[in-house]
Image (tube, rainbow, N blue to C red; front, side, top):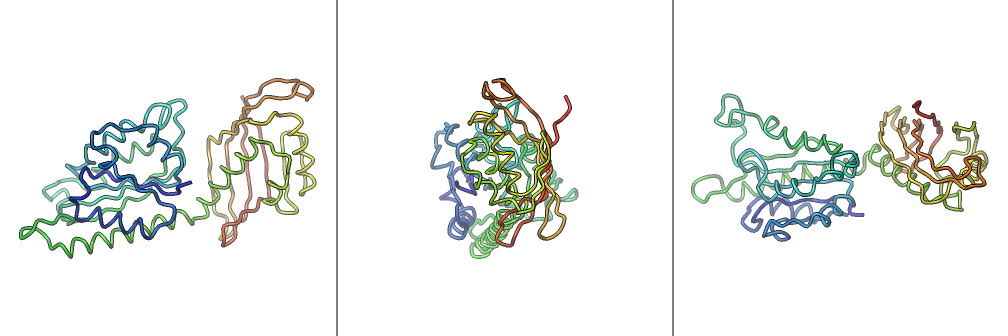
Length: 321
């Protein structure tokens, strides 16, 4: 998985004195980053939607890197958003594919900071002008991270700015972006979210080996399931055998909501809403019925400095109706 995908929206990156510097710094200093240069990939503006959506699905963090053109994104990047953030992908009844991913707007601004003020010649603040992009992120269920932008990023020889100063500001911009990405990648909340995704992906398979799960449970873990209470690893194994004899493999756990609260530096409370879609065995208590069950789950987890996660308490409650 490419944890970070950077979408470069400059329509002619070779002509840029700043976006090129930022992308070079990011590429050399961040691991697991994929930079997608739209100007090279789509000089004809014909976006390969499947390829772009796949790149987003494979990422935890999405960075839109672009120059601020006429108070918005360049036309190439706007076309990319229009095509890629499609119905039932980014929005709509099944459009949850980007939900929970972080999105960072990283852009260069030609004008000085004082011009983006009610009394300046641009009249509006940067934060006001990017509201449509912020709402786009919200509609897609993404986490809108504080944008990174830098002013005075245009160089016109003999007219405006000095090239060394402009590129120096670009390197400072890149440092801020790299720091922000690393903080997101290494945050406890991000680690817990990754763990949740893997936990339920494993459950969908219903593997023979329960050790795949018990290694993430404390020895005295308390589990309260819909059919009763279980304690420790042995209790989990008993419950898991019942689950495996009831449900067929290749079920679906769809995480509809996640809320993570920090209790201390090492402990977090996790509240989830999860939908289980599964087929049962004819000889089970469900007698071969297919189920679509919505539950609330409440986890108490600990996380170590190296982001190893242990579940201390796991409580499942069916949602009425």
